Length: 254
Image 1 (cartoon, one colour):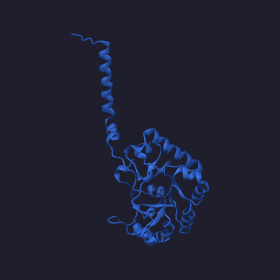
Image 2: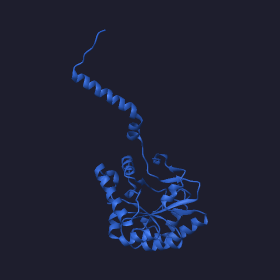
Image 3: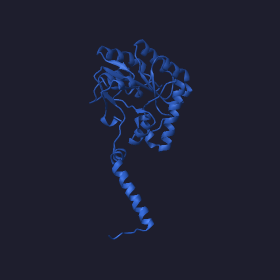
């Protein structure tokens, strides 16, 4: 039998190629998933309940916070407030009020910038700082993130999930930041806009509690009472997710 001899360098090179080949075969599915999966945030859920999540973003100002909290208290509603960490640091007394009233707190990031424009290291730093600030102020675990301006890509979703966040968008937008007037805000939520439907079970509603949306406290009582009359239950995002059969879109099931 003829024995073949290979130089040491060739043996090392062949061994390296073989190892890469084995790893590729063994991890092929995972590599494909990371490289090609189009990840999405959670816009809504499929549920057998009558629950709808009500959310408020805050990045500046203080005029609307207490009025909104009082309305929610009067209507016995618990909501999710997505807070930017610089605002929370400047208004710790309002953060405390939000928590005292029994509401859920999520992160709205640190700077109000599109997260998909940041490098990996910048993004990780941005999300970690926000999480640490909010957890210290609320003494609660922060695991929900709403990206500023709703801007994201698959990389943002992947990194946020690795840091313990679920990324939350919305399915019904009040457009209150455009200052359209209370009646328009009510209509946007109850009846929807253009081809979009109004609020229904499984939806996530978007409002703002920043000073940029002065009409929100005026519209909120009618919205809540109208949805209650339809036997809908307004809840925080965490409650909606815990009772979900499926997140929507399917790409958000991580």
